Image 1 (cartoon, one colour):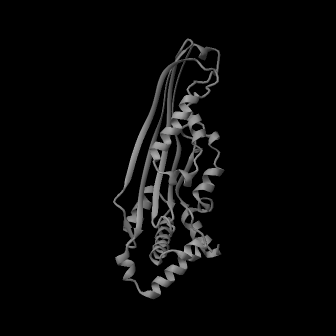
Image 2 (cartoon, rainbow, N blue to C red):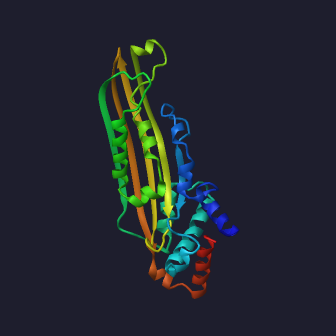
Image 3 (cartoon, rainbow, N blue to C red):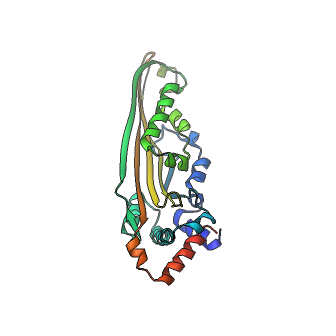
Length: 267
């Protein structure tokens, strides 16, 4: 990949996120999230990271000219906006909606859901997770997203997150706490924005956000424990396609420059 192209992607997404959301997620150690400390910034957070899908230096050459112009124009808009600070979800959506080269699809997704588990359990001394809840969280997450491509792009280890959510035991810290203890916790686990680049099979930008928040409340009297655990999920997504009427009206020289700029992003 050319140095100028690497520089542009880094300027927009940052040095780590520019390598792709899958790289960012795989390097993140979810097991180190402390669900009892809501002030700690130990969760997975990125304002915007790219997902390149099947796009590379060879495949982009076979793409439609309008897609390449759209890519180049969008990268310029995002780069200009990123100079004002970290890209927020609202900021990204504002940039895309105001870009004359883009046309938003009607199928906007704004979905949220909660999974709540309650029950009375015999006290678990080590706060170990309930395996049945782990499986339920996994199924719930797949249903929340409802898009196999997004699940494949992000590669979030939902099994690890599910184990965090399923920590139903309030851990013993002293002998006295065996008889009475109350704990309440709420913690953001994931808050990420992703821009999936178009390719030949999916000729559009897909921008989406995933936010997961886990919470728990445990009350114990003597050896009986009442637990309530939950996870709140938010999934927002929208597709953007080339606005043909605008791109077709551009000068040929301008379009050629945009095509070259888009191709240079991938070497």
